[in-house]
Length: 316
View (cartoon, rainbow, N blue to C red):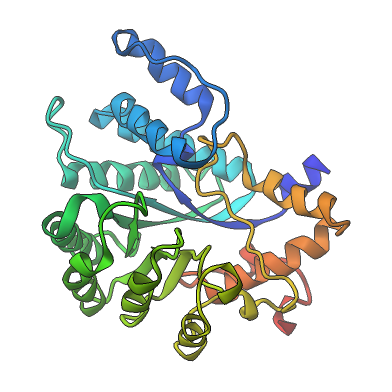
């Protein structure tokens, strides 16, 4: 079934920093032996934020950013992904003189370089979301929105929106509200990670009032998981994509892997796991999830023959 899953044309939203493969990290570690970074086993939970710090240490120059982004896009293409949406937080690296503008430019350069090669095995469309790290406060958030707006106008449609993410236990969405409202007013698509921890109910109410174009994680949104009926009703009234938008409403899970590198997985494996666990055929599992993503969650228009290869796809 591995080969079958690899061949399925797929759609994915992913975090760039979390998608650096272990093989690529080992290559970078050999180039930076003075950092004394040890290879660790696959990790879970909050430890992933520590791994991101290591990745930031390893990927700190223009050349590293370009190389990592190009390799990552090629790896995603090899996994059968036809539409890739990458999010990344612009970084200032004072040691190498790499500023936030140059950081985003290198990500775009990686995409354009691959697109110009027109390699058959790299058949993929890529879009970028500029991400706000909630830990860094309102001033940095506003600067990031301005940066995203500039690239929205100058990147030939590659930068499409703004993402709010980062450690959910740090900061509060109310401090970032002005920046997020500006993003909406600039016509940036807005993706918010919310209800990731049980203490975020008030913040979730505040952020849903914007409203976002899409939400991520939402672990504690449902009343049975520490959320509330009012939160669920708000999402329905504002038509924010969530479980009931699936073609078959009994399937309430979207298969994604934000961090294929950190958790040593890929999207093909994420399709295989529920298929084998719940006795689904890979095809049925794929159709329900994939068509939902294409119909409701993409921030651009793509060739449907590329991402919806099934003859009966128009019936959904």
